[in-house]
Image 1 (cartoon, rainbow, N blue to C red):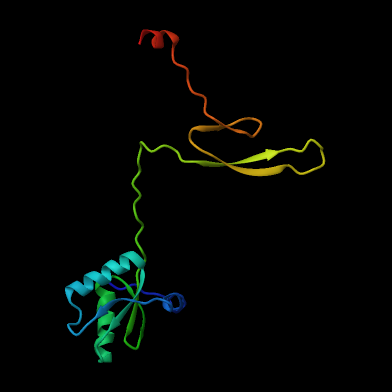
Image 2 (image 1 turned 180 degrees about the horizontal axis):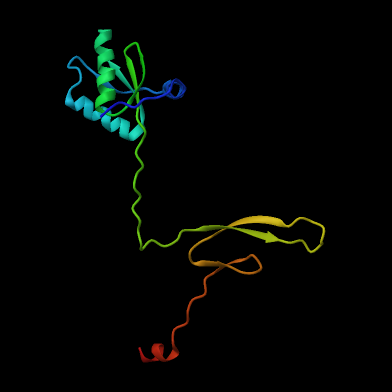
Length: 157
């Protein structure tokens, strides 16, 4: 997979966003092992923008690690400063599971109360109406009407 190409302006924005981040993965003396690549991939999926600390003193090796990570993980190399590597990849959208049996939650409704005097502005009140409640024409919240059972059914039982 090829690495993502960014404009200098985009790279600058990501560099600024990464400034306050702490390294989430450390690459030790073993270098880029499959386990390290897997952890970096998981961190990119979760966060999008990450810092990686490399404990090696060889600058060319660190530069090679940054390029190989960007190529293999389909990410963009943002910055290599000292022993820190900054990588970015857009976070994939999470698919939300739709539950058909789920009932609607509370609704926030605006209630307008008009003044008895004509020239004043109406009072606006935001009210939370739960599933078992209803709003009356006067702006009051009441419990939903319960349906009455049949007299014949209750007498027979």
